[in-house]
Image 1 (cartoon, one colour):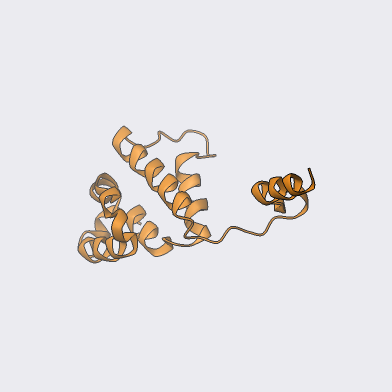
Image 2 (cartoon, helix red, strand yellow):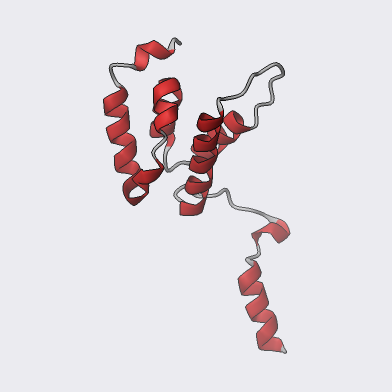
Length: 115
């Protein structure tokens, strides 16, 4: 789909994403908005879901050969958004199984109690 098709709805997308970002609105991706409004719309749609983590990872680490990549400032914004979204823990992580499901901190506490 052509990026220009989103130009009329960008203010609505911006308002929706800024509301979702709350106190982190200072990390709003203005370069993404200007150059890739389709991506901005997808970020706004997925904010707070595990799907956003996967989407941003796909954008940052493309697996298709021959892709040029993003301009530097756009790439930085996408990376910052990925880090922010992960740090805020807005998206529930899939439950782990086996050893990965053990919380290292609680495991250490149990070990301290025994010793």
